[in-house]
Length: 393
Image (cartoon, rainbow, N blue to C red):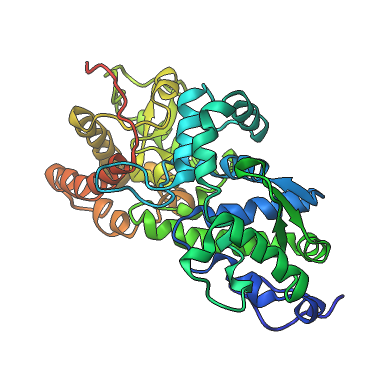
């Protein structure tokens, strides 16, 4: 096994000793330092992905297409803001704007594949040109600033001057990860240096893990109300959903009490319903019992990842939850089914210590549930989750 250097650059980036001796790893570690916008992370991530695929030369256009693909799922499925929102409500981040523009132009679903996204980018290339060009303004150049022996004046950052400076620095002093061609805007070539290509290909997993860690820290700072953000950077495996024991619990409830669908007021029939989240799973990223309900399967598809109207649906939802609460304390067999949910569906401290404790009146139960759910619901609204336009029965 190759000897490893004990020094770590950032988080989880451990390289073979030979690379520290031949390449400016400290400069490489600075490529994501103090970014003004999130697309600095996506720029480097895209480069690493392209190099790992054996590409040695590309263009700004191809890198930015890769960036849009990598950001698509977080922005579209989970409503993540890559760099916050301006005071006038406008999106600040250029990459986020590019994703939203493509979404408006195309009919792509939030979980579109990378091939589908790239095909749509090609189809709407003219309409996306302005947004993509904005992404080329500074990041490709400033990402290399950690390698520079001096701090440059603002006048030295003009595209022509900085392109020439990067090329001369690479030839005379420092081997840079990439140099840039003389072409303009999206056609500008990006040429990866063989020694850096070898290092990145040998350490792709570690480097991508490091980028992911730094990106999550940035995004969490700009989305402080969003839970489970680390899980919202790529499509999730549906096998992670843990609803089997909750379904068994609701089946147990139906043995004793009639439960009505929150949205239709129809009686729920044994085994002919879905278990769904009141506040979308894509926002809370958990399968906590306090947020789950039995509901009509066809409506579940219609609701998708949208929020139900709070009034009157929360009251109906809370009523079903209170029926569940009463039976878990009144029927030993139902309580046993409730206990089976501990591992996967009962992690919230407030739910265990307040909501499901024995002795709550109906009013107390409703108040505890609303006190804890309403702020989460409001956070999802602020994050951009759409309210489901379901007729009230």
